[in-house]
Image (tube, rainbow, N blue to C red; front, side, top):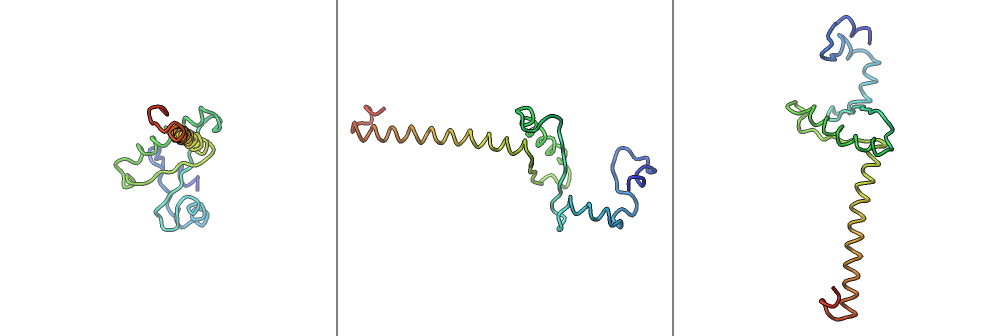
Length: 127
């Protein structure tokens, strides 16, 4: 398949070679990246560095923004983009932990205020 691309001398676009869709190896690889109904596609994007570090986690937003920018003004403009992998998982855990901590702190303060109001029988004294 790779040799079929070389004679085209087309470096700006990556177009399938003539007869690519008839090639059984190409069809097998296509199944890995396109859904059966043709409405979902998988792209493999990698970045330099270790994904489980703060630097790797910081790349997630930039990758997602670049993907959105790449599909603007195309038929895929309304597509949904999901990012998976180690860095994306750690980013989701970090973001979730931040909101969980906020919820736990608010719940604790509310419970303490409620108990103090019950003991003192006064909102002003409890505050």
